[in-house]
Image (cartoon, rainbow over all chains, first blue to last red; front, top):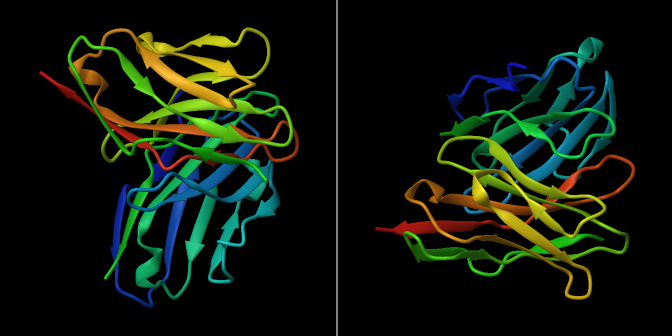
Length: 113
Length: 114
C-alpha cells in the first residue's frame, strides 16, 4: 500500500492558462474523489468516480473543469482558462466500495497569478 | 441536506491538558461520522470513524469520539495533549448510500502550549 499519490505538489500558473493534475489512488480502491480546499475552509466535494465512470459532479465544477479516470486507475483533473478564484488545494481520495473512510493524497496546491 | 458545524475555529490547550474539539451534525438519515487531522501542506489523515455499533469510538494517537444521537454531536477528545497534536482537525459526515461523499466542517486549529 503506497498510499494516494498526487502530482504535482505545487503549481503556479498565470491566469488564463490550463493546468492538469494527476492522482494515483491505492490500486485496489475503485472509488476516487476530488475535493477542493480553500484557505480556512474544509474540503468541498467536486466529483466522484466508481471505476472509470464519473457518477457525480458538484455544481462547483464549472464547465472549465473536467475530470477523467481512464481504465479506472489514475485520474486527472484539468482546469481550463484558470482564474484567480481557482487558487486552492486540490485533494484526491480513494476508498473501496463498502469501506468507509477515505485515504487522502497530499494534495496539489494551485496558485493562479 | 447534511451539514457539519465545528464550534471554535481555534482552540488552545496546555501540554498534558484535556483536548475537546466540538462537532455537531445535521442529517436526515443515520450518519456515518469521521474525524480527520491535517498537518500544514499535507492531505487529511483519518483519526477515527463511526459507522454503526458502539457509540464510543477509539482512534489513532489516543483520540476518541462519542456519537450522541440525541445531541447530534460527535465531539473529539484526548485526555492529555501532546505538542505533536498541534494541527487542524476536521469533522465530516457522509451519506450512507450512493456516492458516500463527505460534508466537512470548517475545521478547528488546535494549538498546544508548552
